[in-house]
Length: 219
Image 1 (tube, rainbow, N blue to C red):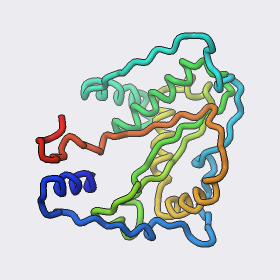
Image 2: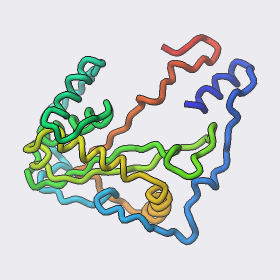
Image 3: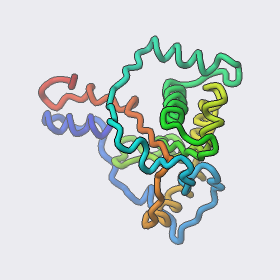
């Protein structure tokens, strides 16, 4: 968000409140790459295609629809996730991501033994030691994942999927980030088919409406 505010300040001819930091070496891969973190299920993997997901519902019309989750719906959703007492707290992101991951597996009528992998972005600004400097201009994210069987996601209560997402977030630390950068450097030329993968991207913490480029705040 800081870089968007900086662009807006520049567009209005104002001095920068936060000066940009353009040092790409901070997140450069190590040479040679050194992958110390035991990613296990927390790295993208090739999954089997037991459910013919590569071409689901061929010939059927695919409907596109947006669903609005307001604060009241998030309260309901999080209460559902914590109902059985397995987890004591959860964020809007973990609750909604787990809910959609579970619902998607059911909607696609996946084989119960189908391995499905959830991929989502994690902000690493505060995960590094020292933290990235304020005003750092780059994509400060890594991809964390959760791996599970469709049958388990559907059969178990929502708390099961939420806990998986929470664990995927907790795994991201300094060692994870540095190893992930090196892992990406080695994997970037490899083609991993995303047959049963589900990718989630959240813009919750990117309030672009607060930026003023000279014509007022974006609405």
